[in-house]
Length: 130
Image (tube, rainbow, N blue to C red; front, top):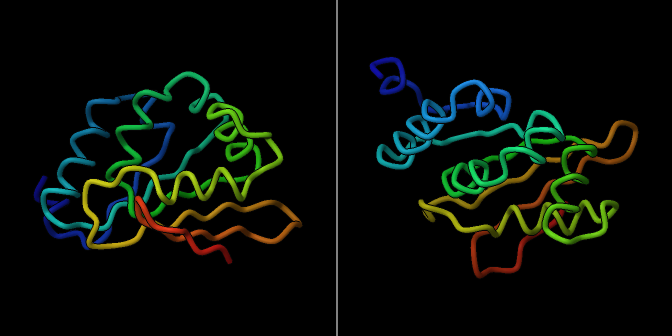
């Protein structure tokens, strides 16, 4: 935990949720309790398929969420969107419940040769899309 105290930015991945969900939750709580910026990478479609309940708790703490087109499409599908509606999925993530509303959440979705989607928002606000 001493290492985390010195950090300005914390980052973890969905793969770690598969390996040790409790450790990820501890990092998330630490980030929120200590006003640390937290980045989270979705990592793979299977993480979304099998660990959605854990992800929903992690999303509350994340200031940045990173993913690619496959992960974003899987997430969109899981919330009832057309898998091709990546902007809609990113907007949902950007405005999802947030434990610390001092900073907007930024969602960054890479799409191979297609433009990267960047969405910023807070719960209850209209997100901005770049």
